[in-house]
Image (tube, rainbow, N blue to C red; front, side, top):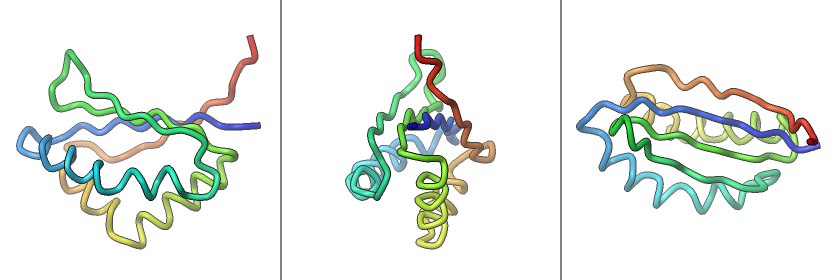
Length: 97
């Protein structure tokens, strides 16, 4: 059964435009990664420095493999440098109602 992953990105104010540019470049590879079923990025109306990733993966393990790959390529470190809080993916199962 698929797993939903939610990640909040609390950005430094000066990093918002850089993050948008990075997402344009990085998201095609994410969407093509084995196990990625869907991915949407949201920008908060109430917090101009908050982005949220809503992701659906085939399994938690497929997401963890993706996150490991992004860490190895340096993307996670680059994003972490733009954030004021650590990245903490949260995993959810569908309730089925």
